[in-house]
Length: 293
Image (cartoon, rainbow, N blue to C red; front, top):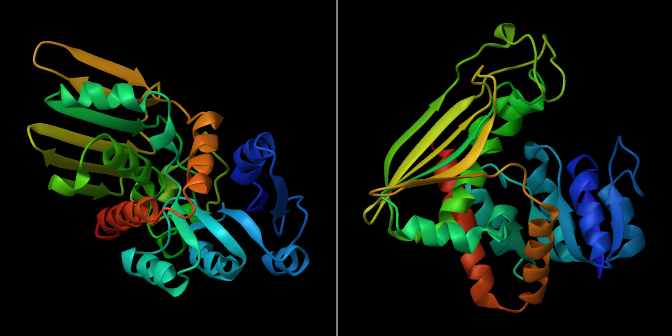
């Protein structure tokens, strides 16, 4: 297997070691960080075709890169939040019918998913949270510029929450009760962050708190994400509220094993249209939830 990684920040931290563990020949591209090639075009010119491609670059670059590599790849994984909207994703898939596309949904491949499903079925309410004490990503950079990121925490963290929801219940049968997307801070309010650096002359025009609530059968699902709570701790967790008890599981960062299982599952299902139709439906639905906030 030959794999292309575009973007050597997250790509180097997670995908390169995972793919190497799988025995894949890894080719890397980054215009700034150390990589095999500076451009995707150079990598394609030398290697011609790839079994898998992982796009791990700023949000506004995803679609163009996906379209560039699509004729030269069997499977293209696009990091959340995918592309600008569901229409763009639909067009991408239709324009390259010989290529498989998947928005990265790594959390669906955690070992605990079966346990979470069982607990959810017994619950009245399920809370999926990713609330950070002080983790606005590089305030003033592309992360906080709506023109480049398409949104803030709703594009950064909420797709993970929606991915869990899609896997843990039949999301097609649920109804949305509420959706809140709020910008609580101005760039001038932010004096520190646990992620990246602050550019005081940059742009900050995105939501930094988001909450979605769904009703599915007898179960209420509350998904929330916050870049900055100003509390003394982070809370990345899933909690199950039942009639006479409650169970909470800390989630933390997704383990490498889940990324590995995601890639292996996609590769093994390359010719399984049912699998890819399922991915398309989920990816379009996730786009639809965040593009209208």
